[in-house]
Amino acid sequence: MNPTSSDFIFNLIRNNIFIIKPKNLRLLSTFFSPIDSCFLLTNARILDFPIVYVSNGFTNLTEFGRIEVMQKPGLCPFLHGPQTDKSIITTLENAFKEQKSEHVEVILYKKNLTPLCILVEIIPIRNDEDLVVLFLITFRDLTAFRQPLKEESAQTSALGAFAAASDAGSSKFSSIMFNYTVLSV
Image (cartoon, rainbow, N blue to C red; front, side):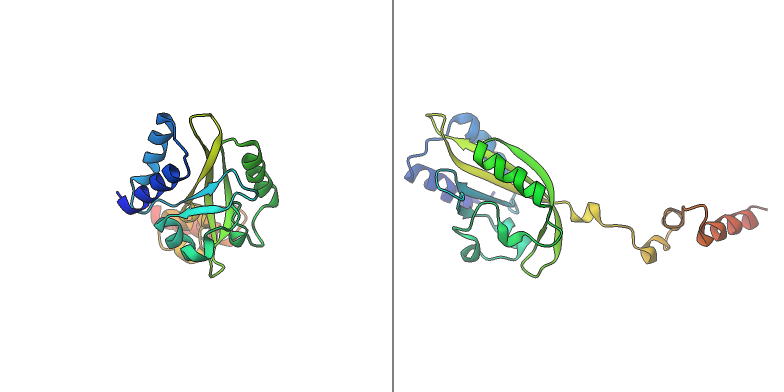
């Protein structure tokens, strides 16, 4: 557990007279447990929902420093790039405006412009008066699960070679099938 980040967040909430309901407190604590939790907190009461807290996991994932990210809009336009789907960004924007939970898969970019496939989840945090006062935005990196098979790495194993050449019309498929037939005889 990273006591520095959770202490800061709870102090931030307390100092802004945001009393979190117990159900939200339990929900929040699940995100603070792992040291590398990747999340932001944004202020739900100000236009553009400025970022008020940046986790270590977020800075590690995106390579942006805290100072570069603080007070930027919660939609994180600094992470958008050519492959970022604008309709997904609109979905996130609507979640902020309607103060509702949402999760989407979107391509975002590191500071060095490396694309990442990210599962983004927005969770509204309410006070005792049932007003949304903060948004918790989590980021889960799915890039490793979305990488296409590279032909070179696919050929290093029989199953990979078969997957890479599974088009029945390809010469590689014929070659694999021919070699299999010869070896079987």
